[in-house]
Length: 298
Image (cartoon, rainbow, N blue to C red; front, side, top):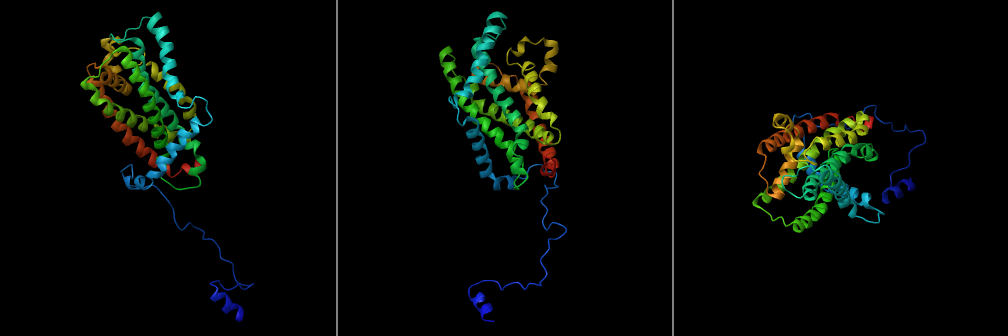
């Protein structure tokens, strides 16, 4: 009796009798976490509640990629610079590919800048769920944050590489024009398109790992069917209506028009904008539909 009183005064629970039945776990889970069944693909309130996790995942991707590297952020600008050098020698000098009156190195770099960001963002976000399987199987959070953080991390690389473009514009004496005001719109459109493709590929890659294997090949082929190494004017007029259905055409031409002062290809931009909106809606809906099975099949 005295031991029981002492335990109560100390805030301790009384000792369990040796013959008392042990507690058992229920057969069914008490709480089941499922994605919303609403037709709205993105739960903005849920994403806002985990906004700090988005920042930390993006910052982690940046630090891991350049950890223990000798050149650090210089790797961000070396890829488009080396590609610019190679294409300038073999296409600009030897093949004499036209560049609409713009110095070919500058023409190439302006096209490679958004394409490098887009392709790297799609590639990283498409494989981000599989790469973060240890988080997805243990902790609940909106899974959409993982590919979004991969795109956000690549956006930082784009901003760093953009400083090289400023130096090239000064070197070739290209003055800014009022078209430059639409450059943030072009960057936002490219980011939204990369996120749309990244979400769709990430959801499919969890179930079908072949997607992650074939993705680099598809991106490489996509580069050559986009006006990065050559201007859109080089495409025959009879093929141009079909050619602008490629959503990257509007992005690349839009960047060149904003930075170099060329006329905007409003038709290609309209197709790109409509395709991006449709892609974001479809990819987020598909992502949410597959989300409940990620932890089981990843």
